Length: 455
Image (tube, rainbow, N blue to C red; front, side, top):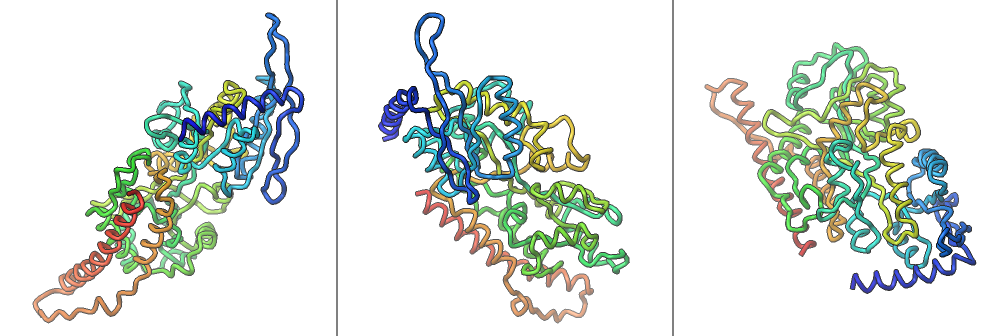
């Protein structure tokens, strides 16, 4: 089936290239609502020194879905034309049915020579036959974190050219505290804190209902799809470590309760930057706002849950992909390299986010810790059959966090010989067992659901 599709595409592209000698080829531009409109881009026949004719393509198409990239890509396109004599058509496309539209455009001759994609969609793009392998030598762990290379890999082949990422990191107010080693340390601090820090209203708060921020509490122990997220035989969700991590996650809620409904990320970030919160989580999408804030902040990797349980946030990765049906694959690969490797040092100045490529220096010394966090992050599976994994996992974590335990945790201890600390330890162990029971049920259900979808 796949070979038949490729044959049909090849035949159609041959017809399109022939017609462009007289009519030109199409180009997509973004309208205000993000949809595409068609204009013309030129192709001409030139005679070589040997007297043969070949098609010279004046420009190539670059598709992307996030307007935040426009200025950066425009700058790269200018340099690319100066260096290669080939123009770049920037096409801001709606993210709805993005891969499907790239495939359809390829069949119809409106080829996205290079396109920027979320790496979770790489399986779909590769199986559709519109993703060529990246064989350029610069794309190794010397220049890119292994997580970036894994995210751009499908079944052992480096397909994408890693461009940038979104991830979370931990922030703290350096005027009052230092980077904590564990969340357990924060709980212990909260137990003795007497409100002596001026302006501080909350010890710890983050947008707990957004899985992007809470994923780190289970990310170290979830293994879905393997290191590159493309192995359907690996679904390791319901394991002991995940259960213990989620039990501790709920215990944080019991010890440092805050209302999830009042923890919208934008509001929490604003309160932290205003000096009202000691500890929180930030996103790479807001680096510009953070760097100009009037607060003595520190950044560190997400603390461990406790001395035994680690954390690992998720990273959302974006990569450039070369379409094997490009009429100018050599130039398409050069453009992909240009935007992801050659101009990576300029990425932050235009986009206000950090590139996937390792940098020689960062706009702020604290941001080196963000790069460290990214290198130790995890990725989401690329498996098309489990596209609801994010929603199901988020729903599970939210249900665990929000579950009311007041009546369930009442316990009477009649042994008068026990100290208050010993009685507290017994109560905590009792509550932990209650939490562990329903966490186990929820985790087993998610495991079964993902297995059912894979099979």
